Image (tube, rainbow, N blue to C red; front, side, top):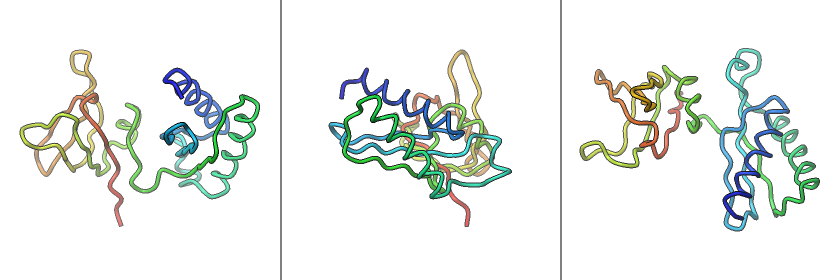
Length: 159
């Protein structure tokens, strides 16, 4: 699957998921796109009425995507639709705004000093000189990381 086709597939999936009233959190594919894995969530602001993603939500999205893939001749072997889990990944800039105040773990692409992994309270996203900066409070110290330097970020569930 070429890059352009992969981007068209992501657009197709996102359009379908959003059309059904959900948010596309992340999309993963195996080599040669035999397995398509779609993670969905409720959009920001909908959390109050219903929390989390149910098995029925996943079935609804899976059924609709299967029909869309048939119409669009998308060749795949298996489709998995699931919730992002309690340790939801932060993928888009909007995620860093939406989950401000929550505990997160993040891994940098390029280390800061000798450190690549950080855990703390997400304080949001700010723009500085045209660069989006993620603000993270670790103990009493505030760190700022360029969004493009973040390799992975996830919520830390509280039990």
